[in-house]
Amino acid sequence: MGEPQKAVGKRNAAVEVKIPVAVKEGYHVNSNKPTSDYLIPLKLTWTSTGALEGGEIVYPKPLLEKFEFSDKPEVPLSVYMGKFDLTAKFKVGANAPAGPGVASGKLRYQACSNKACYPPKTVEVEVSYQVQ
Image (cartoon, rainbow, N blue to C red; front, side, top):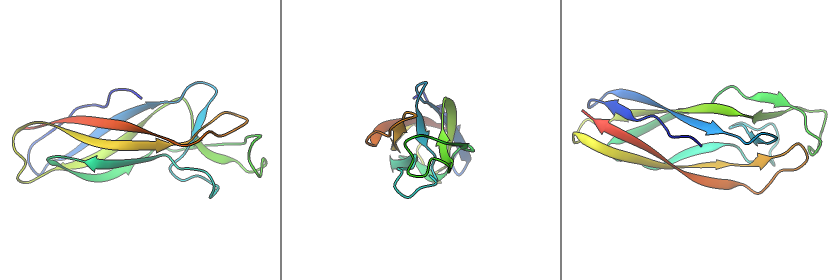
């Protein structure tokens, strides 16, 4: 995962932050809306947002691909491959103190090769912000 952009805004302002994600070549991760119930979705959640109020997470449009390991190999799965961005939307709190801060979260995903899926993992995500 790459370094997220820094969020900068005034009190009550809406801010968006792009969070770059890179999936290793030869692998994919399930999208945020997998096509089978047994697959683990990509999911970003905030554990602490400081002076920011967490909002919508915008996921990119997934790819539809067929894989050997699937219980129904003829049915495409909803996945992400390569490099893509998640967009996190925040609102700067009305009473937010001016200055820097950090929003912390977790990105949960299940990586798969063309033949098998691996146990889900969770990585820490931090977004720096500056309240003006």
